[in-house]
Image (cartoon, rainbow, N blue to C red; front, side):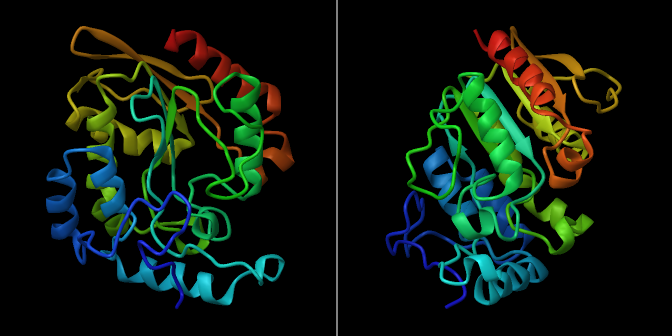
Length: 264
C-alpha cells in the first residue's frame, strides 16, 4: 500500500478506520464545518481524498521514495495540524514537503526547512527539542500549533488554485477552533500570508480594510473580540532561502522572539 492506513498504529495518527473521508470539495466543506473538536477535525484532515492530482502524487512519492529513505515507510496521507490544543501562537506554512511531512506524518518534520524552524523555536522556548525527525520522537510545541494552508504535498511545491480552494475549509475551521486562545499568528512565506486572511476573517477576526503586503518582520495588529492578536510575517526557511542567505538563523529568531514576547 502506498500510504499508512488510518488506525494501524502510526505514532500520533489522529484517525481510525471509521473516520469519514472527504472525496470532493463539497465533502471537505461539510466535514470541516461539522468538526466540533480539534481531534475530530485533524482526523478528518488526515484521510482527505478530495484532490485527485494531490492524492496521486503524495501516494506515488510514498511508494517510489527517495533513495535516502528507501527503507522507510512513508505516511503518504494529508498532514494534519499539530501542537498545543489551546495555542497562544499559531504558525502557518504552505504545504508539507514530499519527503518531509509526507514521509513523517507531521508538518515541517524531517526536512531541511524543519531543521531550521525547530531549531529556532527551541532557542526561543517554543519547542521542547531542537530537532523533529519523525512522529512520536518526543518533540512538543510549547504554547504553539502548526498548520498548513494545503495539507497534501504538491508536485513541485505548487498546489493548483482549485486545490488551494478545496483545502481552505480545513484551515479555516482549525483557525476558528483555536481562535479563543491565540495571541500571535506567524505566516511562513507569502502564500501562507495570503491564505490566512480569509481564514482569519471567517473565524471572526477583525481585519484592516486593506491587506498589508507580506514581508519578513511585517507586523499587523488584528483583534478577536476584545483581544488584540498580532500577525507576523516571516520568510520561509526553505533551502533556497537559507542557502542564499535570504533567511538566517538570527532572522528566524527575531520573529519568534517577538512572537514569544507577544504571547505573554
